[in-house]
Image (cartoon, rainbow, N blue to C red; front, side):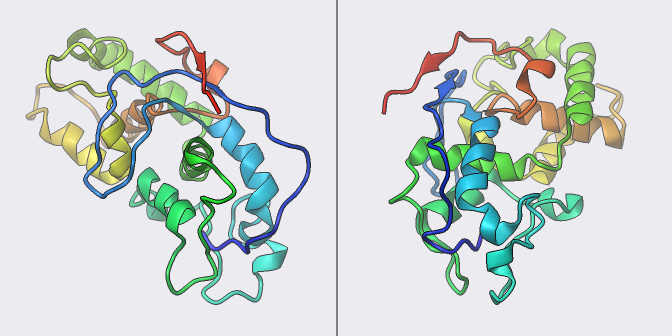
Length: 224
């Protein structure tokens, strides 16, 4: 993200209410991964306040303040590009800034929970509600008998772990396919991507959360 420090304004974003992850964990890329589900809907409001001037109101990378920046601000709407992006990368960009760009660090403005909310919001923009619904349906039909409805039935290898935030969609898809020899579970290429989109929702609550899946754990308010 290339965001000019000092942009933004408007009404304060309300404090979050979020559900704990089933299993917390450490990532492989150095990010301090969340122990609670991030809230993409809240991230959208934070993005509109602090990021849209450079990255654009639709996150296409064409905000008014970003037109003269070189390199230009990142856009988050191209599917093939976003398949290779990790949520943790965007968290780290917000935390430390990005060398060689206009993106400065935002840890003085946004706390860790805020940064994860924004990171998951921009990262999740290519997974629309229909894909999440399809992924949930495929998971329930083909995966839940072994892995459980919330991904925690397999001892020692739960699916709902925070370290997944350090993986790309492509990496997680390869893990899903590699863990099931031919004929074990029949999932077409499109179905694999749909399931992967669903698996990531155990780390964050999508903008259209209520229409996609209910949290498996009761929500609790984060202390600020």
